Image (cartoon, rainbow, N blue to C red; front, top):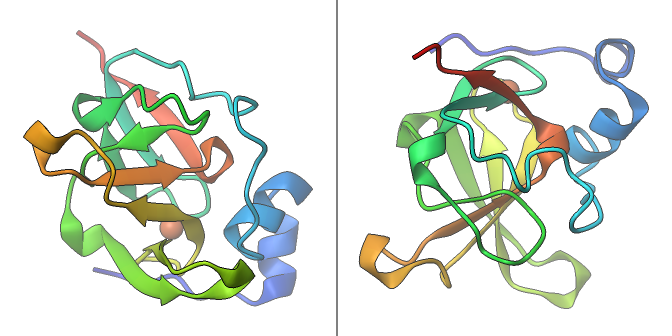
Length: 133
Ligand code: FE
């Protein structure tokens, strides 16, 4: 995989302020505000910073949390998981492996019949490409 390395100045230029705060400063959008929370269209979600394919609509489920939630990434190689002990919590951070941008967190309270993962991802960190069926 090609990796994308940019200076923070370049990222700031290429991203909206809202995207920059989440992708590069590890922010979190407010629940139920993101544009993909209730998106049920078929297609795939890409990294808003670098365009890499990350999640399929097939893995999306309604978690009730207010953030787009997925049971698994399209390809485990496309994400990096890191221990995150910030804000007094033990969480697992989900990062785009191609560009190093913050996407969200991984929790283990997802659907049990699908392995129990809940990738809790900021809408702002994603773009959606609808399948043309
Ligand atoms: Fe990326």
